[in-house]
Length: 117
Image (cartoon, rainbow, N blue to C red; front, side, top):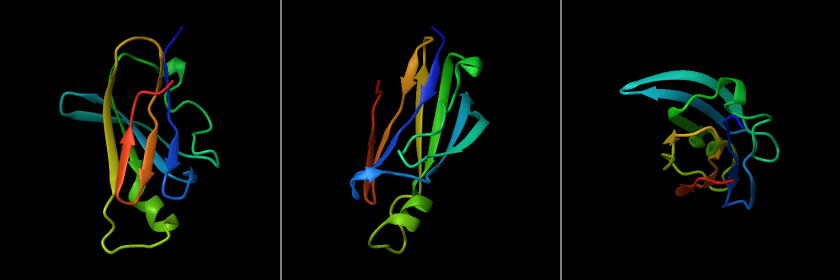
């Protein structure tokens, strides 16, 4: 099995998937970051395909940047000024060829993540 990366974003304040949230993927080497792609979540809060497909998988360090501030500005029930959350970066290591799933649980005042399945 080759490795690949998926994600899922849930808006826990609204109790639904976070549709229309932009996500950037970077490969990290030391202090340098190389931008690999930008995707947007669909109506289910997922990207339409793997954010890093099998054909491009490499073991190493990566960063997902979830553009939560822009999403919250567009969808939060009570906007605040200034918005508490902006971009949410999550750095992680993919150490073997496997399915890595990095979800984000998001609300206007906090977030959590974990290695999902």
